[in-house]
Length: 316
Image (cartoon, rainbow, N blue to C red; front, side, top):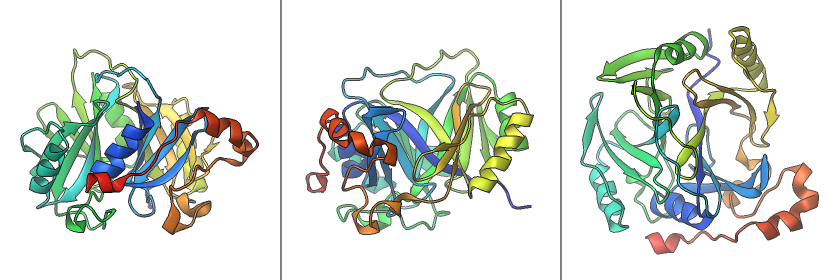
């Protein structure tokens, strides 16, 4: 049977300064800014989408940047580290590049037989780069990062929880995930066990709850093919006692949301239709794109948004 869920679709975080957000994820990390729009639930706030050339599912890290937002704190009930996939021989390049821009980088770590580094963005968002030879996605580069070292998309995500049993049951019985292995208090799950679908449950039985604000993840979205498969998942989840929202139209995908037992907000998002429905592929992310219901308020919305620019040359 074809699985209804095929991995991670996107991960969405809360950020502070909109300009620093673009500078970090497009300037330093080299991800393409594929869409500038608004938070559909808070129209006076940007919603940025960073990813590969077309913002394909499994590559897109998105942010809600609130100017002046206080910093949140990592803790249980949260996705604490987002892991991106890089080539097996790219760690040294990234260590040097990150240090060039004053970013503190961890020593090289080993996890499930692969090497990785850990660091934080300007808002203290937890990020990992995992070196591997299992990822044939081309990644994206604005030309200032060698293509062989470009970030290819997500590797996976770490959910920091006080207990794993109910979350593991959700993943394996209702979301097409399977158990892969254990290292200490870390339990790994995947749909196929490849970059782009990995979810680690890191158990901290006495950890403090995280506080959500700038530098923390708002939600993790999982991939499903289309609205039909999304409705099938919605029905399965509701039959098993999960409080699932109605389908929400996010223009570039359709979404449903629910809380997993440990407190992390989950989304199921459709692969269709993608980010090229309102911009030419060659010019993604250049203009502020609004949903149709907000167009009549464009002047007011743009007046309330802090102007930003994409300044790649400063990060060559």
